[in-house]
Figure 1 (cartoon, rainbow, N blue to C red):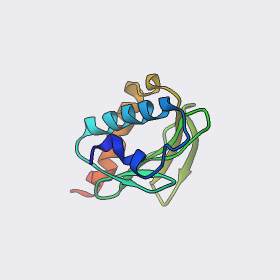
Figure 2: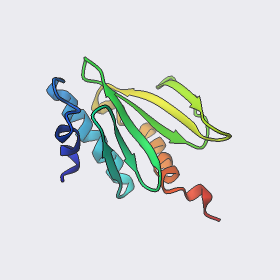
Figure 3: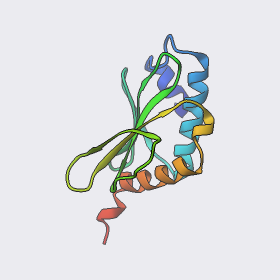
Length: 126
């Protein structure tokens, strides 16, 4: 199955603005720049996995923006994050909203690379 079809197949985008799919497809391309991954769709969320989940689209807002999060091993201070949660000693979940493809800039790509490494669990390798 084509990765851009994942959300559509599971009804994630039903009744949402058409631009939402364009934005989702752009996010999938950015995630794919990091390497292979496994999308895990449900009706309410699409997670992206390697050994563990490293990022997700949690929901679609009425305006078509994507509410997402990524998992990092450190806290990042940025106004781009709407919420930052500590889960465990050094597991930080950073929530953010994608409103347009312009949000998929180099700063977000760098965090996505870092989250991808968390998904690969490279921090556990000696």
